[in-house]
Image (cartoon, rainbow, N blue to C red; front, top):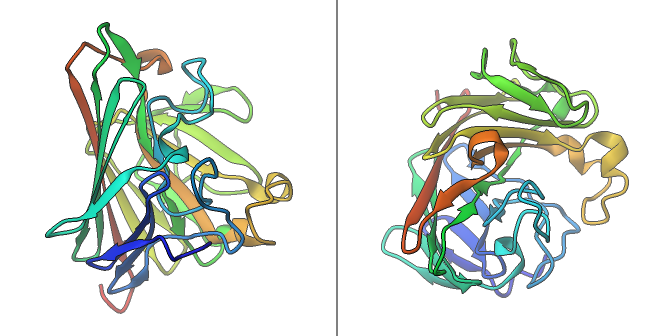
Amino acid sequence: MDTQDLITAHGLAAHPAGAHLVSAGTPGGELLFVSSVTGCGAGTPIRGGVPLIAPWFGTLLGEEPAHGFARRVDWECRVTGTGLAAVLDRDDWHLTFSADPTPNGIFVELSARNDAPGTRPVQLAFHPYFGVGDIDDCTVTGLDGEAVLDRVTGADGRVGGAITFNGLVDRIITAPAGRTATLTDGTRTVDVTGRGTDSVIVWNPGAENAAGMRDLGEGEWRRFVCVEPALLGPDLAGVPVVPGETVTIGMTAQLTVPELG
């Protein structure tokens, strides 16, 4: 990735393309994974870091491109007194983003204001790639009993115990804001908590799918897990936003390593 356009401050680094956070240094080390072969720039989403998903998730609202336009276009970015901030006006959506370091991680916030004359749905999400030692050692816990849609099999059910990784994992879990999902690789632990969200997506492509991803280095699929707080709306149909209304989500991600406790 070309780093010459990165905006850096307060231990954070972001690229204007997608207002994409690509680095978050903590006392326990780097929080995020970024592919060694990713492209970057307008129209080329960065593989890794914290992609911003707006104003729809995937193609759940029947719109293209997948995951919306926010991660594919340049934002106006700036350094603040505490972190980084960015703004984007497109298709009558006014989007704002902020990222601030915390003692052991980050707090990020994404807002969407409807500047169109009519009510329309919105979906917002963070798609963070958290760095791990090896996928085989990873689990995600803290979501027991919540409704889950397995997008690989199409099956609905309930989360029962730790989520583990063997092949493609792509699950949408209905989880109230404030519910903490805990990712661990046996050494590093990341606690991920959403604000204003109603879902958590857990994703890793697995070996077979990763082999077809040209923006991911060989074997790098083993080095990250995505735990994604999202606002998807009832029946995954988005949240209606009236003209002038603003919808906001946030995410806190805290890294713990043994030597720090």
